[in-house]
Length: 221
Image (cartoon, rainbow, N blue to C red; front, top):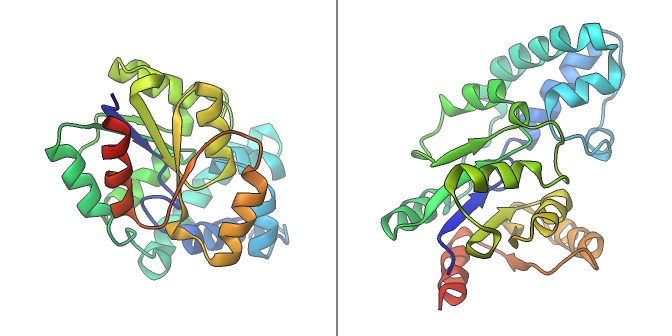
């Protein structure tokens, strides 16, 4: 019986895509890197800001580059953070009231989360696993395994909700059931996800946060 629900963060609970890309571009452009487009940023498929910075800077410059990214992320937040997805607050409140233990497993850094957390109220989570806490990012299963260990959960009673193919790959590797958060995607993005996800592992596509609760009820019974 499912008792634990783990969530990805960006693109699943909160809409940070515009903010993230602008902060990355601003950080890179300041030191002469001309990575300008959304497509180029997304094509890197690097989960966290430090790992992204490591793609462009030598090891002794990554920490400073990440610090500049966080400064830009904070400075741009008020203008480009697009908020919590509609229906997410209600979903989290309802799941807590029904006794589910909730967690976040995200490729975001704790530094970026601390900035965004100042602007939202998602409530308390029973475990939080960020990129700082793992040696291998998604699609590796380390983050999910760590979260389950923190909760004394097992794969059979855990669901992971995420928006990316990397999230699905991590869930499949961890033996955890996966709900695909399609509410953040356009029709073409959903189609691209479905095509990329084919053959990786089973999942349930979810068009609105409210459907998560219905699907959990089906899984529980």
